[in-house]
Amino acid sequence: MSKDAVLMGGVAGARSHSGPCREAAVEIQSSVPWIGFPVGYAVSGILLTIFGYFAMILAQ
Picture 1 (cartoon, rainbow, N blue to C red):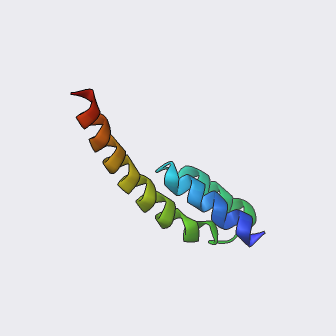
Picture 2 (cartoon, rainbow, N blue to C red):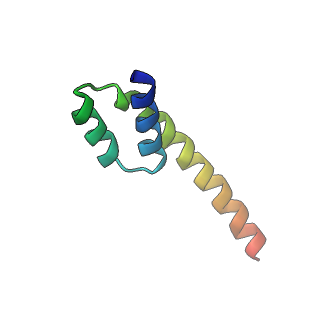
Picture 3 (cartoon, rainbow, N blue to C red):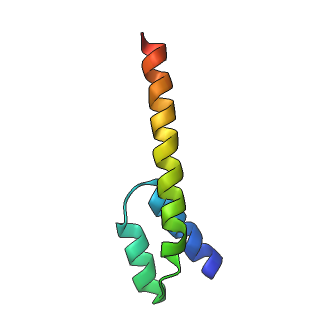
């Protein structure tokens, strides 16, 4: 069950929204989903910045 909870936190982090992570933590009565949240949040932020830059370059 903890592997699924970490995955749920990672998906919530990638979507930059803490609501699903909070709900998963309440549902399973554990803070395990918060382990995956920062990783997904950071990776999605970096990729959005990089791909946004390339999209801007290609649009010119």
